[in-house]
Image (cartoon, rainbow, N blue to C red; front, side):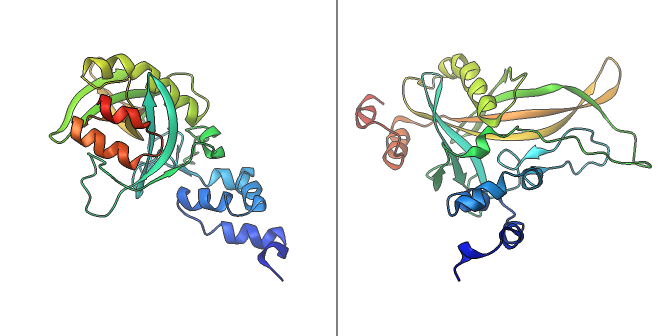
Length: 245
């Protein structure tokens, strides 16, 4: 008997031990049955990470965008368009903010990108602390990262989003003018690294704490030499780009 002959209940039990989203992605590429089982309602619910704050009424974040994992969701962009989606793997003790020459896995065709960035809000039940107020939808912030660290910040509009892919696409299009203004050539292939964070801010008018989901997109600003080295490692790069950097 092969593993394919096992009943679906056994396969579901095996898949329930998968914790990280990269393992789930690998599983969907292994067996068509595993792909179907991982997109059932029960399995989908396990892909969302709730807040650690018991007062938070915000819905949980999809694992592709949640922080605290050994990878980040990234994409390559050109002319304001997303050309590929991938997981960017972060080695231990790495210089995380710069994301230089890390291993990647292309997930451009993954069904996980078509799932909502946020899950259903979690009920805290009776006796929980008074929930914090929430702001409207997902907001976006674009950072520019170079060897000196964070060198800029712009607000990006990211409202009325239904899927992770749509969220990233809208962010990239709205960030293009800011990238140009910061000296990042949008006619060349570039890299943006994402995370979706829960942020608390103080409303000075009402003196109340407001919770929001903030999509952080880190645009990697590389020197000409660093850009050429990065392109050599990227299968989506065109050969003629190297000469134009």
